[in-house]
Image 1 (cartoon, rainbow, N blue to C red):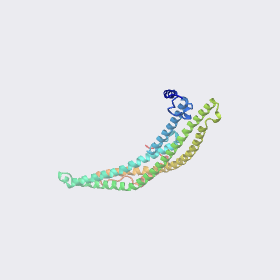
Image 2: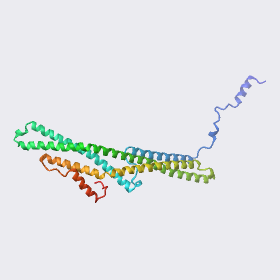
Image 3: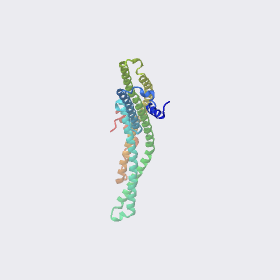
Image 4: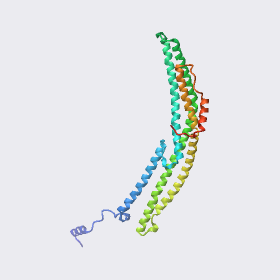
Length: 302
C-alpha cells in the first residue's frame, strides 16, 4: 500500500496531457517554396492585367470611342471611317445652321416691325426705304424658314442612317476588342505552357508537367476562334454600312451648298427685295453632277 502523501507525489510525476490536438496531416507537408509562390503570383497578375485591358477597351467602345487601332484597319476602312465622321459633323452643323438662320431672320423681322410700330418713320427717314427693308426682312425670313422646314425631314433621315452605321462600327469595335483579348491571352498561356514544360524537365517529371497549362491553351484557342468568327461578321456588316454612307457624299454636298446659297439669297433680299436669286437647286445639282464625272465620288473632307 501507498500512503496518501506518496500518491500525491506520484501524481505530480506523471506527464501532463497534451494541451492541444496534433495538427492535421496537411499542415505537416512541406510549405510552398518562395519560387513557386512568386510564379503563382506572376501568373495571376498577368491574367488580371489582360482582364483589365480588355474591359477598358470594351468600356471605350461603349462610350463611342473607337477601340480599334489604325494599324488593325485597312486604308479603305480608315478612309470610310473618316468619311463617316465628316458626314456626321456636317449633318449636325447643317441642322443647327438652318435652324439658327431661320430664327435669326424671324427675330430681325419682329424687331423691324416693332420699330415701324414705334414710329421710326417720324424721325425723318424715307418711308419707302423703311418699307423696303420691312419687305426684305419678310422675304428673307420666308426663305430661311422654308429652307429649314424642307431640310428637317432629309436631315432626320440622314441622322438615322448615320446612327445605324455608327452602331455597326461600334459592334465591330467591341467584337474586335474581344478577339484581341483572347489573342493576347493565348500568347501568355503558350509562354506559361513552355515555362511549365521547362520546369518539368528540370524536375524530371516532364510527362506529368504543364497539364493544366495545356488545357488552358486549348480552351483559349476555341474561344479565340469563336471571337474571330464574330469579329469577321461584324467587320463585314460595318464595312457595308460605311460604304452606304460614303455613297451619299455628293448628295450631302448638294444639300450643304443649297443651304449656303439660300442664306446668301436671304441676305440679299434684306437690302434689295427684288434682287435676282442665285441659281436654283436643280441648276446646282446639274453643275455638281458634271463635276462628279471628273472627280472621285468620295472626296476627302475639307
